[in-house]
Length: 33
Picture 1 (spheres, rainbow, N blue to C red):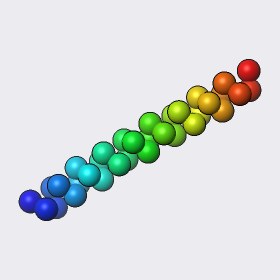
Picture 2: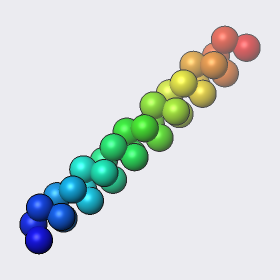
Picture 3: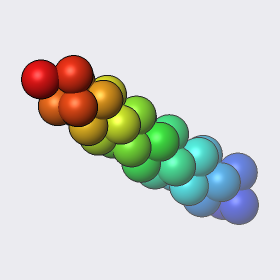
Picture 4: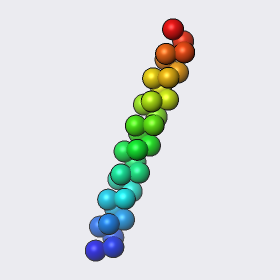
């Protein structure tokens, strides 16, 4: 069961990282305008 919990945590962390990358890209794009 601990393995399943770890997998969920890793997946959530990956989603957060992806969202932060998208925000960074949007901010970088906004600065070019």
